[in-house]
Image 1 (cartoon, rainbow, N blue to C red):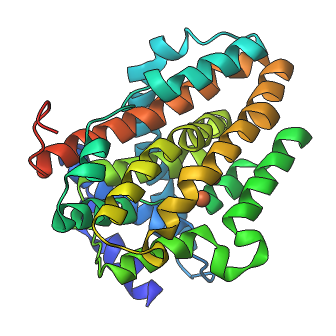
Image 2 (image 1 turned 180 degrees about the vertical axis):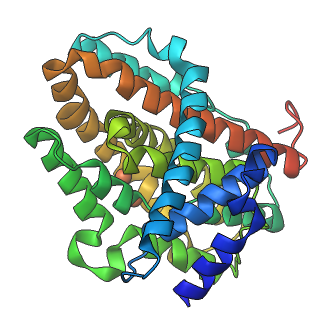
Amino acid sequence: MSTTSSNAERQSPELGSGAWTQGGPELLHRVLLRFNQARFRPALPAGDWEVRVREETELRLLEGRFVEAERAAIAAWAAEAPTDPDAFVAWFQSLEQEGPGQNDPLFPWLATSASLDAMKWFLTQEVAGEAGFDDLVALTQLKLPTQAKLELARNYWDEMGRGREIAMHGPMLEDLARALDLHPTDEGTVWEAHALANLLCALASNRRYALHSVGALGAVELTAPGRAERVNEGLQRLGLDMSVRRYYAVHATLDRKHSAEWNREVLRPLVAEHPEWAHAIAEGALMRLSAGARCFERYRSELGLVLGSA
Ligand SMILES: [Fe+2]
Ligand SMILES: [Fe+2]
């Protein structure tokens, strides 16, 4: 199965000709999405592995150019982040109110006004764009200093339901998708949602962006509770019980604790030991929040939500 699909991918003209450079963001993020699906999938050695490695090099260059463009867009803002550890943590925390996409009108609208169909469309995009926080944390923790590594381990263990399948976070989202009969497809997902997932995968998979990944994941913990709370309210308003809402109900509260611990155990000690890492962490956070803001804007436009009418 996997050999067939990867053969099909390799023979695809869009992968072989460099056509993505003219294909705009839709094609770019479709190509990177497929790359990310394939790169983490357990596989077996193949006779043509050298061809695959060469292809991977090309895709990693494409990925790197995407990340560098996103980085350039927020670099000046990130350069304002202080390098004193306490001041840095305060700056980072201020992103909860002042970061890109924060207090987006999409979320109060989902809480108070969205129809079930609109909510389901939104959730389908979110499910399709979910990169898997557990694996992103696992990839990011490689060779980090001990205090930060231990916090990423605790965070990963929570993602893993502390060893109980029923409490794992990933399957909670799958349960919600099943209960609401959501069927996310690559084609039915807006490119902005794929770009968000592709960004997080790129940061976690390339060690030159390890600190960016630390910042991006910390930004998720910082900002997810406010959004999760609004989505949970909307689901409750639409009559959906806790078994369906659990993923959002859990993240509305647990991520506040995760965020406080990430700031104290990861950000502060890393910046105290390596002040030169502060701007990379800040860039990662701002890239992640900007990618989120781009999704919210597209979602609002697809859902016909006019600013000021929410
Ligand atoms: Fe989680
Ligand atoms: Fe979390």
